[in-house]
Length: 89
Image (cartoon, rainbow, N blue to C red; front, side, top):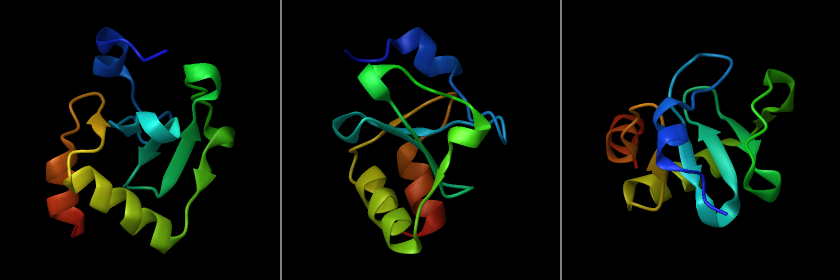
């Protein structure tokens, strides 16, 4: 079950209140600014600050590279390619 577009348009990180990167194939939402990810059990976002999982630098780079290749969907106005360009994909 995919997250519907209206929800993606407003879905933001509960910590910094900014957009996220959605990787549907991995069922995660990723905050590239804070290096935190949120899992999507059963395709439902669990957006609680204490559920954010830190990622390693290697994992961060992997996700940014994927975003740069068009493999992520941005939420709340976040543009994946711009994130990848800024963070060095």
